[in-house]
Length: 73
Image 1 (cartoon, rainbow, N blue to C red):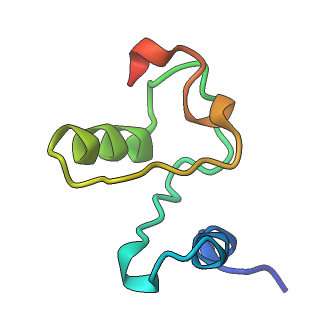
Image 2 (image 1 turned 90 degrees about the horizontal axis):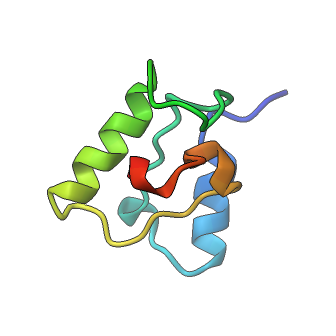
């Protein structure tokens, strides 16, 4: 049985001391490469939330899944 997208990430955030209602997992881009921002709605949502000051911390399992080029975000 597979866990719902983001369930593992929420568990890891809780292990680090984050309260469940303070964790928001953007799972729309699970799997695609970070080589391009095209067609990555989750990435666009993340950068919008960061730009609006609604994000205090971004946790990523693998930073290359987020973006290969730091100027993308």
